[in-house]
Length: 438
Image (cartoon, rainbow, N blue to C red; front, top):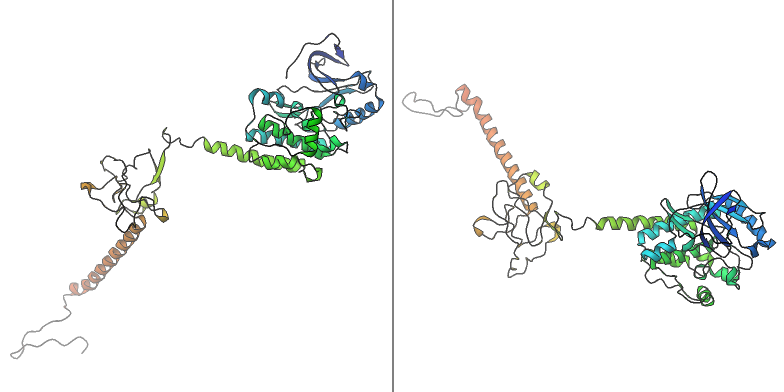
């Protein structure tokens, strides 16, 4: 926050606070940087002499200061002290170090969507506490929002109101900028928490674009636009534009509540921040920009572990995946597109089911090409698994059959008995022995 030297007409001591610098001046009075005897710094505002003479304003000021004492929340500047009976009433709030939102945007330009949403969520949460205390800020704008290291803080809440300011016929007595005042304030109607929602929508639009949603011009022109024309939201990020437009509805009943705003803006801030986080590691594959990924075909005849471990292998643009066969020393060659067959069944694009595209140069063995330069079809993982299962089943069945035969012949050979025995000729001839059991 910019500080200026004290002028000759400025007081040096107010209450128990010693004044050091000017922080700014507004429709109600001048704001000073002060400190107490313990060294606590405060922002102390002294009311203008003409307003101090207005008893109606003093009464209103007293009610608002009493309500401000009840406000609790980390997103507001805490009220430290006030003197309502002084010749020129004053109040002191906690000093918040850091630039205002207006100064930050003016110096650095529009803020990114994630930062705008995070600031808006914190401000909405602060306004919930303000409204629960029965106070309506009535003058929320970028210059009344300080960006401290601990988050945004709302200042001048609930007391920025002067006699006759509801109609804004005397702009000099009004506190605030016409581009951030709600239509009901311009018409002189009663203000509600929805009035602050309108101002918050205009503030978020300013943070996103660096300009008021109702443009520039004289006070009369700006106030007419607020009441009769739609806001210009060009430049507001798409994630925020619908919510900002809802805040700027002419009818207060159609605006979202501060609680709804806080929840919605937190979601947007989290989503936008996550989107930025996902962009950073993209393309960071072995330090090569534009790294691609291809599926590594499973080597023919490999076991189930090779099939299960097949995944994505990063390769540089214009190359192919290195060979997955152990001990294979063939050098990788650039991928070449195989001309399509006469039937046109095979193309350069990968087929459904995650099969590798023909023509990538990967041979059945998983290398960049088969030995001898023969053009073989790429290995199909599913077909390899089926063949492997059939091979294992057939092998097991064959082994089981051999074991069964050997088991049946073993006892007979051990006893020395053949299943069929031809006896020697008795009585001059030969005959076959009768089967057992006869």
